[in-house]
Amino acid sequence: MIAEDTNYLSKEKFDELTKELEHLKTVRRREIAEQLEYARSLGDLSENAEYEEARNMQAATEDRIRVIEDQLSHVRIIEHTKGNVVSLGSTVTIQKKGEKVEHTYEIVGSAEANMQEHKISHLSPLGSALMERKKGEEFTFETPKGAQKYKIVAIK
Image (cartoon, rainbow, N blue to C red):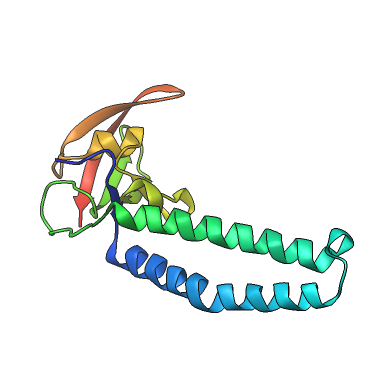
């Protein structure tokens, strides 16, 4: 069962976010503190562009830290077991009915979805239409151009 509030991530994305969080909390916070200290040393803070910029960077960094911590607090690592049924972590090759061109997508959690990398969310119209289906199975899903028929060519 897939829970709506769970943030499904691959092990690679989890490691990437954990590393980014560590960097922000240690290195980036220290850099900003140094910039703030320098800006304060310049005097009048009311017209100090360096101070304002450092405060804005501090706010953006703290916001990013909160976002990552929230994502990681609801995380569940995708442990894809190779099989013949589409699930989170599957790489699926599909072919539109009546066409020769095949399209391959990886089914990922919403936080990792990226069409340029051919990673689609399990909650997207195509992703949800693919879930739990088997190789060779035909399926239909709604697009802005209407219902489209596809066939699952391969599952990895």
